[in-house]
Length: 266
Image 1 (tube, helix red, strand yellow):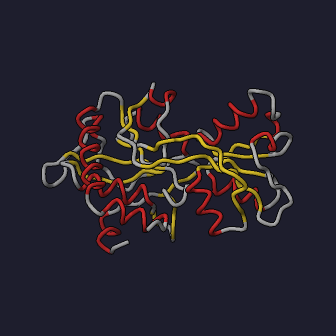
Image 2 (image 1 turned 180 degrees about the vertical axis):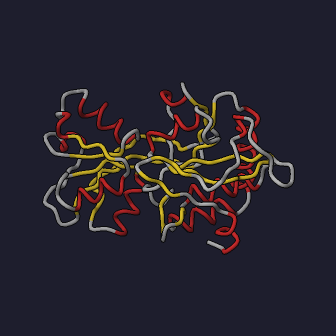
Image 3 (image 1 turned 45 degrees about the vertical axis):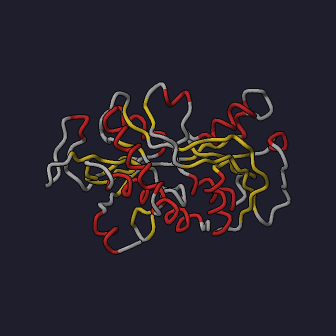
Protein backbone atom coordinates (compact mmCIF):
# COMPACT_ATOMS: atom_id res chain seq x y z
CA UNK A 1 0.00 0.00 0.00
CA UNK A 2 1.47 3.35 -1.02
CA UNK A 3 2.03 6.24 1.34
CA UNK A 4 -0.35 8.27 -0.84
CA UNK A 5 -3.08 5.68 -0.28
CA UNK A 6 -2.63 5.85 3.46
CA UNK A 7 -2.66 9.63 3.57
CA UNK A 8 -5.99 9.77 1.73
CA UNK A 9 -7.73 7.46 4.19
CA UNK A 10 -9.53 8.40 7.35
CA UNK A 11 -9.89 5.67 9.89
CA UNK A 12 -12.35 5.01 12.66
CA UNK A 13 -12.48 3.46 16.08
CA UNK A 14 -15.32 1.16 17.01
CA UNK A 15 -16.66 0.17 20.43
CA UNK A 16 -19.26 -2.57 20.63
CA UNK A 17 -20.26 -2.26 17.00
CA UNK A 18 -21.08 1.46 17.27
CA UNK A 19 -19.34 3.43 14.58
CA UNK A 20 -17.36 6.55 15.43
CA UNK A 21 -16.35 8.49 12.36
CA UNK A 22 -13.39 10.79 11.95
CA UNK A 23 -15.11 12.65 9.13
CA UNK A 24 -17.65 15.37 9.86
CA UNK A 25 -19.03 15.46 6.34
CA UNK A 26 -22.62 14.29 6.00
CA UNK A 27 -23.85 11.65 3.56
CA UNK A 28 -25.25 12.91 0.29
CA UNK A 29 -28.45 10.97 0.88
CA UNK A 30 -29.16 13.31 3.75
CA UNK A 31 -28.14 16.44 1.88
CA UNK A 32 -24.42 16.04 2.64
CA UNK A 33 -21.51 18.25 1.73
CA UNK A 34 -19.28 18.85 -1.24
CA UNK A 35 -15.60 18.24 -1.70
CA UNK A 36 -13.18 21.09 -2.22
CA UNK A 37 -13.43 20.58 -5.97
CA UNK A 38 -17.22 20.75 -5.92
CA UNK A 39 -17.67 16.96 -6.05
CA UNK A 40 -20.21 15.25 -3.80
CA UNK A 41 -18.72 13.65 -0.70
CA UNK A 42 -19.80 10.15 0.24
CA UNK A 43 -19.15 8.00 3.31
CA UNK A 44 -18.41 4.27 3.05
CA UNK A 45 -19.20 1.58 5.59
CA UNK A 46 -17.51 -1.75 6.23
CA UNK A 47 -17.14 -4.53 8.82
CA UNK A 48 -13.53 -5.44 9.70
CA UNK A 49 -12.72 -9.02 10.60
CA UNK A 50 -13.23 -10.40 7.10
CA UNK A 51 -9.70 -10.80 5.72
CA UNK A 52 -8.47 -10.14 3.10
CA UNK A 53 -11.51 -8.01 2.17
CA UNK A 54 -11.51 -5.76 5.25
CA UNK A 55 -9.47 -5.94 8.42
CA UNK A 56 -7.42 -3.91 10.86
CA UNK A 57 -3.62 -3.96 10.68
CA UNK A 58 -1.76 -1.92 13.29
CA UNK A 59 -4.99 -0.05 13.93
CA UNK A 60 -5.49 0.83 10.27
CA UNK A 61 -8.35 -0.25 8.03
CA UNK A 62 -7.01 -2.21 5.05
CA UNK A 63 -8.11 -4.86 2.58
CA UNK A 64 -9.25 -5.65 -0.94
CA UNK A 65 -12.64 -3.95 -0.56
CA UNK A 66 -11.03 -0.85 0.90
CA UNK A 67 -8.55 -0.47 -1.94
CA UNK A 68 -11.06 -1.42 -4.62
CA UNK A 69 -13.79 0.99 -3.56
CA UNK A 70 -11.27 3.83 -3.27
CA UNK A 71 -9.97 3.06 -6.77
CA UNK A 72 -13.53 2.95 -8.13
CA UNK A 73 -14.51 6.25 -6.50
CA UNK A 74 -11.33 7.85 -7.89
CA UNK A 75 -12.82 7.18 -11.35
CA UNK A 76 -16.05 9.06 -10.52
CA UNK A 77 -17.08 12.63 -9.75
CA UNK A 78 -17.58 11.68 -6.09
CA UNK A 79 -15.13 12.09 -3.23
CA UNK A 80 -14.67 9.64 -0.36
CA UNK A 81 -15.00 11.59 2.89
CA UNK A 82 -14.20 8.65 5.17
CA UNK A 83 -15.01 5.16 6.41
CA UNK A 84 -17.28 3.98 9.20
CA UNK A 85 -17.05 0.57 10.85
CA UNK A 86 -19.96 -1.58 11.98
CA UNK A 87 -20.77 -5.17 12.76
CA UNK A 88 -21.82 -6.79 9.50
CA UNK A 89 -25.47 -7.12 10.48
CA UNK A 90 -25.66 -3.34 11.11
CA UNK A 91 -24.41 -2.25 7.69
CA UNK A 92 -27.72 -2.35 5.80
CA UNK A 93 -29.58 -0.40 8.54
CA UNK A 94 -26.74 2.16 8.51
CA UNK A 95 -27.13 2.49 4.75
CA UNK A 96 -30.93 2.81 4.73
CA UNK A 97 -30.77 5.29 7.63
CA UNK A 98 -28.36 7.44 5.55
CA UNK A 99 -25.51 7.13 8.04
CA UNK A 100 -23.38 5.87 5.15
CA UNK A 101 -23.74 5.96 1.36
CA UNK A 102 -22.15 2.72 0.23
CA UNK A 103 -21.29 -0.67 1.77
CA UNK A 104 -18.00 -2.36 0.89
CA UNK A 105 -17.90 -5.51 2.99
CA UNK A 106 -17.78 -8.65 0.88
CA UNK A 107 -21.58 -8.53 0.78
CA UNK A 108 -23.29 -11.19 -1.30
CA UNK A 109 -25.97 -10.03 -3.73
CA UNK A 110 -29.14 -11.96 -2.92
CA UNK A 111 -32.91 -11.56 -3.20
CA UNK A 112 -33.46 -10.88 0.51
CA UNK A 113 -31.01 -7.99 0.62
CA UNK A 114 -32.15 -6.74 -2.77
CA UNK A 115 -35.59 -6.10 -1.27
CA UNK A 116 -34.06 -3.44 0.99
CA UNK A 117 -31.07 -2.03 -0.89
CA UNK A 118 -29.57 -2.01 -4.38
CA UNK A 119 -26.21 -3.35 -5.49
CA UNK A 120 -23.60 -2.40 -8.01
CA UNK A 121 -22.46 -4.86 -10.62
CA UNK A 122 -20.64 -7.84 -9.06
CA UNK A 123 -16.94 -7.45 -8.38
CA UNK A 124 -16.02 -10.86 -6.89
CA UNK A 125 -17.37 -14.44 -6.86
CA UNK A 126 -17.19 -16.87 -3.96
CA UNK A 127 -18.43 -20.13 -2.41
CA UNK A 128 -18.70 -21.18 1.23
CA UNK A 129 -15.90 -23.13 2.91
CA UNK A 130 -16.04 -25.27 6.03
CA UNK A 131 -13.01 -24.63 8.24
CA UNK A 132 -11.81 -27.01 10.98
CA UNK A 133 -8.81 -27.24 13.30
CA UNK A 134 -5.65 -28.30 11.51
CA UNK A 135 -4.61 -30.71 14.27
CA UNK A 136 -8.13 -31.94 15.06
CA UNK A 137 -9.68 -35.32 14.32
CA UNK A 138 -12.85 -33.90 12.72
CA UNK A 139 -12.69 -34.09 8.92
CA UNK A 140 -16.17 -33.44 7.47
CA UNK A 141 -16.68 -34.00 3.75
CA UNK A 142 -20.24 -32.67 3.41
CA UNK A 143 -22.72 -30.48 5.27
CA UNK A 144 -24.45 -33.57 6.66
CA UNK A 145 -21.25 -34.41 8.55
CA UNK A 146 -21.78 -31.25 10.62
CA UNK A 147 -24.92 -32.69 12.22
CA UNK A 148 -24.66 -32.83 15.99
CA UNK A 149 -21.46 -30.77 16.03
CA UNK A 150 -21.03 -27.28 17.50
CA UNK A 151 -20.40 -24.96 14.56
CA UNK A 152 -20.24 -21.20 13.98
CA UNK A 153 -20.64 -18.40 11.45
CA UNK A 154 -20.84 -14.61 11.44
CA UNK A 155 -24.17 -12.92 12.13
CA UNK A 156 -26.03 -11.79 9.03
CA UNK A 157 -23.71 -13.49 6.53
CA UNK A 158 -24.43 -16.07 3.86
CA UNK A 159 -22.43 -18.49 5.98
CA UNK A 160 -25.10 -18.15 8.65
CA UNK A 161 -27.81 -18.48 5.98
CA UNK A 162 -26.22 -21.71 4.79
CA UNK A 163 -26.29 -23.10 8.34
CA UNK A 164 -29.90 -22.02 8.85
CA UNK A 165 -31.25 -23.19 5.48
CA UNK A 166 -29.23 -26.35 4.94
CA UNK A 167 -28.81 -27.65 8.48
CA UNK A 168 -31.11 -26.14 11.10
CA UNK A 169 -34.33 -25.76 9.07
CA UNK A 170 -34.27 -29.36 7.72
CA UNK A 171 -33.64 -30.60 11.26
CA UNK A 172 -30.10 -31.80 10.59
CA UNK A 173 -28.64 -29.57 13.30
CA UNK A 174 -30.09 -28.50 16.63
CA UNK A 175 -30.09 -24.72 16.95
CA UNK A 176 -28.31 -25.05 20.29
CA UNK A 177 -25.27 -26.32 18.38
CA UNK A 178 -25.04 -23.15 16.31
CA UNK A 179 -22.92 -20.22 17.53
CA UNK A 180 -23.31 -16.79 15.94
CA UNK A 181 -20.44 -14.28 16.09
CA UNK A 182 -20.03 -10.56 15.55
CA UNK A 183 -17.09 -11.25 13.21
CA UNK A 184 -15.18 -14.19 11.84
CA UNK A 185 -12.02 -13.50 13.84
CA UNK A 186 -13.97 -14.39 17.00
CA UNK A 187 -15.42 -17.47 15.32
CA UNK A 188 -12.01 -18.77 14.23
CA UNK A 189 -10.55 -18.06 17.67
CA UNK A 190 -13.34 -20.15 19.22
CA UNK A 191 -12.54 -22.89 16.70
CA UNK A 192 -8.86 -22.81 17.63
CA UNK A 193 -9.76 -22.98 21.33
CA UNK A 194 -11.90 -26.07 20.79
CA UNK A 195 -15.22 -24.44 21.65
CA UNK A 196 -16.68 -25.26 18.23
CA UNK A 197 -15.71 -27.85 15.63
CA UNK A 198 -16.23 -25.95 12.37
CA UNK A 199 -16.83 -22.51 10.90
CA UNK A 200 -18.82 -21.82 7.72
CA UNK A 201 -17.19 -18.90 5.93
CA UNK A 202 -16.59 -17.42 2.47
CA UNK A 203 -13.89 -19.34 0.63
CA UNK A 204 -11.31 -16.55 0.06
CA UNK A 205 -11.61 -15.52 3.71
CA UNK A 206 -11.19 -19.13 4.77
CA UNK A 207 -8.03 -19.35 2.66
CA UNK A 208 -6.62 -16.31 4.43
CA UNK A 209 -7.30 -17.76 7.88
CA UNK A 210 -5.83 -21.12 6.82
CA UNK A 211 -2.63 -19.37 5.71
CA UNK A 212 -2.27 -17.48 8.99
CA UNK A 213 -3.69 -19.79 11.68
CA UNK A 214 -3.68 -23.51 12.57
CA UNK A 215 -6.95 -24.18 10.73
CA UNK A 216 -7.70 -25.82 7.40
CA UNK A 217 -10.48 -26.00 4.82
CA UNK A 218 -12.22 -29.37 5.10
CA UNK A 219 -14.36 -28.89 2.00
CA UNK A 220 -16.07 -26.24 -0.10
CA UNK A 221 -19.84 -25.91 -0.44
CA UNK A 222 -20.63 -24.35 -3.80
CA UNK A 223 -23.04 -21.44 -3.62
CA UNK A 224 -21.95 -19.34 -6.63
CA UNK A 225 -22.20 -16.07 -4.71
CA UNK A 226 -21.37 -12.66 -6.18
CA UNK A 227 -20.19 -9.75 -4.06
CA UNK A 228 -21.36 -6.20 -4.84
CA UNK A 229 -21.14 -2.77 -3.25
CA UNK A 230 -24.39 -1.98 -1.43
CA UNK A 231 -26.16 1.31 -2.21
CA UNK A 232 -29.48 2.82 -1.21
CA UNK A 233 -32.53 1.93 -3.24
CA UNK A 234 -33.20 4.78 -5.66
CA UNK A 235 -29.65 6.23 -5.72
CA UNK A 236 -29.49 5.40 -9.42
CA UNK A 237 -27.06 8.12 -10.43
CA UNK A 238 -24.57 7.11 -7.75
CA UNK A 239 -24.99 3.42 -8.55
CA UNK A 240 -24.31 4.06 -12.24
CA UNK A 241 -21.23 6.11 -11.37
CA UNK A 242 -19.88 3.23 -9.27
CA UNK A 243 -20.61 0.74 -12.05
CA UNK A 244 -18.82 2.93 -14.58
CA UNK A 245 -15.88 3.34 -12.19
CA UNK A 246 -15.76 -0.41 -11.56
CA UNK A 247 -15.75 -1.06 -15.29
CA UNK A 248 -12.84 1.34 -15.76
CA UNK A 249 -10.89 -0.28 -12.92
CA UNK A 250 -11.52 -3.75 -14.38
CA UNK A 251 -10.55 -2.69 -17.91
CA UNK A 252 -7.21 -1.34 -16.72
CA UNK A 253 -4.58 -3.07 -14.59
CA UNK A 254 -5.83 -1.87 -11.20
CA UNK A 255 -8.28 -4.70 -10.51
CA UNK A 256 -5.73 -7.40 -11.32
CA UNK A 257 -3.08 -5.59 -9.31
CA UNK A 258 -5.36 -5.53 -6.26
CA UNK A 259 -6.31 -9.18 -6.78
CA UNK A 260 -2.62 -10.11 -6.87
CA UNK A 261 -1.94 -8.02 -3.79
CA UNK A 262 -4.69 -9.40 -1.59
CA UNK A 263 -5.24 -12.93 -2.91
CA UNK A 264 -1.85 -13.75 -4.37
CA UNK A 265 -3.34 -14.65 -7.76
CA UNK A 266 -1.04 -14.27 -10.75
